[in-house]
Length: 292
Image (tube, rainbow, N blue to C red; front, side):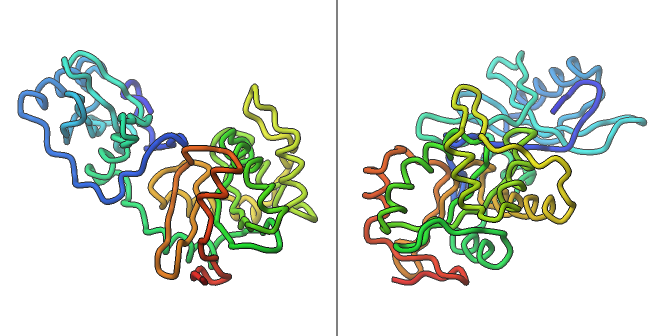
């Protein structure tokens, strides 16, 4: 995103470390002095081609800004930036600003400004996966857990390696919703896996040949994807975008009927941790409900 020559559409991709802003109150408006500072800074940086329309108080004096293009000949749209506490620095991208308690302040600001939707509940996500997503199942026994994976996601790779021993033992099943947004090859790799005769085996190949140093899945991206499969990956990714963070792995499970949990990333990627996390949980059924 740029506050320079042009404005581009908002694109916000959070990392697996970013917390969710679900359930938090809106951020308060910035002071008139901060707003004046923001107007002056944005005017200087963009030669007065962008105007600040809203400013909110962030953590430790940071100020969240919403801007729009002004004057003829400039693309329409909104842009987001952080202004530093002294009013002299600008961070013109919607990268996650994550606090010590994993509060994603950027996500919270975007929601407060009305530039991003509030996340849908975990139960709704499970329902949408069951009814709208293209998925495949890993394992034959154990409770079913929904998980969004990107073929190029290093944290997904760690989650897969930790979860598969439980899957092989029949203690867990994973319903995989493949998405593609982390790298240019992500969507075409997801398409290649979904089009394979056995998506489960194709994913296993991707993870077995995962190149950790460059964070690249091992499967080759499909060369000429049909619009239909491109649409499938896009729809899967669209569901993920409503969870509160475009982050992988995102995991949805049910502790018991009516009690769904959603997590963007995990605190630990080990089989021992997953065994404790998923012990005694319910199973998400084929229609997105929870069975004990």
